[in-house]
Structure formats: C-alpha cells, structure tokens
Image (tube, rainbow, N blue to C red):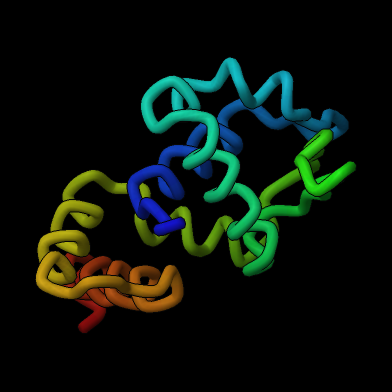
Length: 126
C-alpha cells in the first residue's frame, strides 16, 4: 500500500487538535475524524501505523487473527511535532509537494527536511 503524504499531514493535524494531555484516542474515535472520511479507513490506518513505526506518534496497535483489533494513540512525539511544524503552513506544504511531484515516492524524512529548508528561506535564516 502506498503512503499518502496528504493523509499523513491530515492525521497529524487532527491528532494535535483533538488529543489532550491525559486522554487517548482509540480506533472507534479515529473513525469519526475528517481524515478517515476524506481518505478512507484503510489509507488512514495505514498512515497512522507508519507514523507509529517512524516514531512520530506514541501509539499501540492491537492485532487479533491478523486483523487490527484496536488502536490507541496517546500523543505526538517530539519528532512528530517537529515534522508537523515543518509541514503545517499551507504555503510551505504546497511548495514541498510541488518540489517532489516528479518523484514516484519521497520519504517522510525528506519531506520534513525540504519543508524545513523552505521555512528557513521564508524566515530569512538561509
């Protein structure tokens, strides 16, 4: 399954908005997110699992009989916040996607670094 970068961004934005300090979000909650409505359940869950795998989300999937039984998310990690802060601005996100549109795939790490470079240019730090 291909990782949809827009779905990744959308889920991070929604998690940041809806997670609180002492709460967890579970699969049944996630199914109500706009990201799930826009990108579908499979694409959204896949993005979340990959974000957990890369260490951008503190979460735990629970599988039973080779199926996802439940999914709990506690928070974004420090690296998750850094990545989201790099891609949050719509102009920066658009420039980042435009710069990578001719490639068949781009890693989340490269997207973050590219967005960071655009941010540095916009702020006059480069």
